[in-house]
Length: 320
Image 1 (cartoon, rainbow, N blue to C red):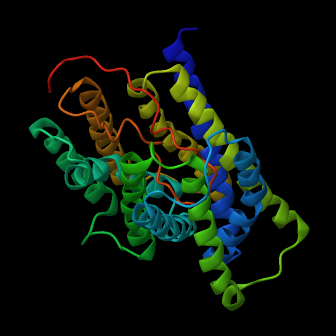
Image 2: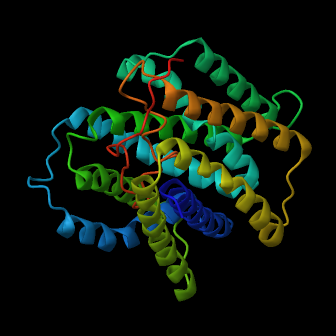
């Protein structure tokens, strides 16, 4: 098996694991309030985070080099966690994924003011087409919109901001700093809200929360290995396989079906996202390549998904 094929397979496994994690979020979200979901998910992540801290070979303290950017990542992680977890409880899995798939489009837009990325006309057109796909999914004016749709959109925006933050300072900060601060932020904020929403949990549900944390770590490790073995332009589009898992899990577990317009909008978003990945992989306009060098998944700040932003990207010298 070639390196790109191996990277693609590892990425498919990673996103299957992430989709399984999200199924647990949705199932538990029908029972418990979102702050309680996040609090216990983060709590069970701390032992795994400490294990990563012990194994981190880079010297230094946990004091951030760029506290402002780390604060922005922490804040976006808190908001993204709250909104994405809520969206999974309020909307069908396929709709949530379709909206979150807009994250690379938003990253492309934000990369201009934050990273000085050069985005040329073809990518701008792809962004516009992808955002039109989001409108097809949510259908404002023809379908009933709720807090779940707004939450998913905010989650995609905050995930994009988090990705931009990682591209900005990811090579200058210790990975454990970028990992632990959002975890601590979620733990403190959701812990403060917990007394107002807490419901007693049986031991089996605690076990599911522990499983969520383990799945987050496993998915992150597979994702890292995928980017190590394959080119980003091959690995990144594998995120869209989650829509298949969402359709299967949604139907078998939650009796959800993917309606026609959600299918059409999702295909538009996926098509534009893949185009952006391919064009960014060919362009020599900038060294940033923010979409290729992210985890390609909305960062909730609650999962142990190490950054792959400093992985090399194989590029050709073709213009855009």
